[in-house]
Structure formats: structure tokens, C-alpha cells
Length: 378
Image 1 (cartoon, one colour):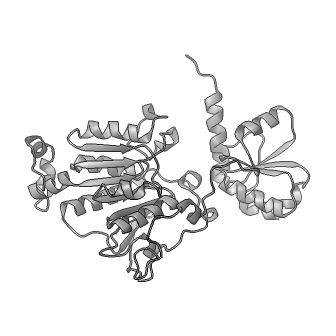
Image 2: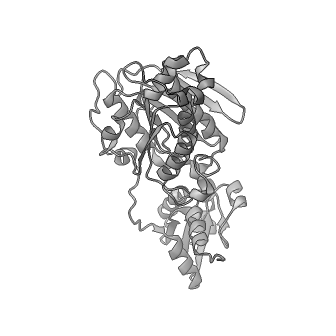
Image 3: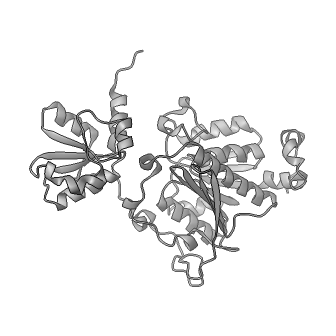
């Protein structure tokens, strides 16, 4: 336990009045350290409250930059931070909130090459990642290092949280042994998310981290907490430790970090001949090429925003409406970010359509590039 200063006694006085916390618990928080994997929708509220609670050392690893589309849920950042690294924006806010703590900023993605080294330097990991490769990487690194992993995930109106610690209970792989096919799991950017949901789940994660560091209460170890914002209901599932788990079971297969992008089937960011960029599509239309543009998103997405001149055919209806299209015409499909349109492209190609592409980055990239190219008043 680390000794408290007079400033600490004033700053944390309301928290220390809890008999379960007191000076001893507050001292343990001050001596503790948490690594946040991601400073996004989950990491934002968690970071704010961990800093406010007096966790002595908070690390943030994130290689992304702040985008205006993040701000409805990533409340750690502000409009003036748009374009800045999320770590820089987060560091500035946390140091203003609590200058008594140490903030460690790591402006890079968590990878197989740096995962063990980075995580080893902290007592506990709070997983705020938004993709399966990072989620499995975080879990496996925590198991290999014997570190607790506070898990959270959100999608649309729903979220889930748990506390994984393989030395005392299950890990993430005990529930989800293998990742789902990438095409079946749209991201929050593609599927949407109510901004308050990551706030709720992120604060549950922060609460679990604070309790564990301070040595109070019982955790979500062995339990998966499910939240539905539409009905405002919580449910709980028991999670047994899986003796056949690939990383924490009796005979583990995974004894070192692997290539998680390949394992999860995540495509590499290389040029795809089946894609057309926003700039290429604009140039083709400006040159008068007869490109048929098809929006494969759902009706509510089409109503909210669309590209001028596009035709709306939801992806689920595409196989039934092939007769309305010509196999000889040039077709470009788009969705929100490119995942669904790539699946639609494959459907058309299998049906004999030869000149079909998917818009890289979807309408999101189209609007971003349009905004960047629009002249602004000085």
C-alpha cells in the first residue's frame, strides 16, 4: 500500500468514507496500475473514472486518431481533438482531471510483437477493443502473463461485461473458443451503437477494476453480465472454466502469441482489385462513365444519408433482384464501410456479373473525402 498525501486525503475523501475503501483501499488504488486497450467508446468512460478514483498509474495503448464521428460515445475527447492521436487527447484530459496520477501513453496498436511487453508492466488490463483480433490477443497475453482482464463489448443497444482471470476462473476463450467469420459480425461503425451503451459497459469495467485493485466486493469472475438498453434489463450467465480451452485449459494449444489478424480472418490493408476508391468513383462519374451505383444498406440507413444517383437494393434482397440488372453494365455497390458491399459483389460475380466492384470504405469514406475537399471560408 502506498502512503497518501494531504492532497489525496482531500481529493478522495468522499470515496474513502466508504468503510470498504478507507485509507487502506485508497492506498492500494494509488499503488495500482491499469492498462486500457483502446481509448474509444469503452475506454473513454473507464479512463475518466479510473483517474477520478485515484488509480496511480493508467496506461493507454491506441494507434488511432480522433474522428468527429467518435464523439457521440467517446466522451474522453472533444471537437478540438479531431485529427489528434487518441492517446494525446486522452492524456491531456486525464492529467487535467487528476494531476496526481501517472498517465502512460502508447501511441500504437496492441500487437503480437508488443503485447506481452506492454501488458507485463501493469497490474490489470481493461479491454476496450472493438475488434476480434485485439480481443483474442488481449485475452491470450493476459492468460500467458497471469494478469486479470476486464472484458466489455457493445453493439447497437446491447453490451456485455465480465472479469477474466485464468488462475482463478475462466478466460474469454472459455466462452468464445474461436472467432466468428468476419462477414457475420458488422462493426459498431457499420451496425451502429447508442452512445450511452458503451458508457454503461465502460463504467461497469471501471468498477470491476477499482474493486479488484482496492480489494473489495466480489467480481464478475465466472459470470457474463448482459445489458439490453431497449428494455433496460440486465441478465447474467454463469461461465464455467473450460478444461479444453485452447489457452488456459489443461492441455493448452496456444503457448505464445500468434498472428491474430490471420487467425480471425481479418483482411490485410492492401489494394483489392474488387474495390474502387471514392476518388476513382468520382472521377469515373465526372468523366461520364455509365456506372450503376447500388446502396445495399438497410432502409433506415438509406433514409439517413445516400450518395446522389444511387439505387437502393438491400443486401438481403439482392439475390432476388438480379433480373433488374445487366451482367454487362459497370456496377459499384456501397454500404456503410465496405463489408456488406463486398459480400454483395461476390453474390453478383457468382451470378455472372463481370464488371462489379465494392466502394472501399463505403459511404463513410465517400463523405469523409467529400468533406476534406470542400473549400472552407478562412
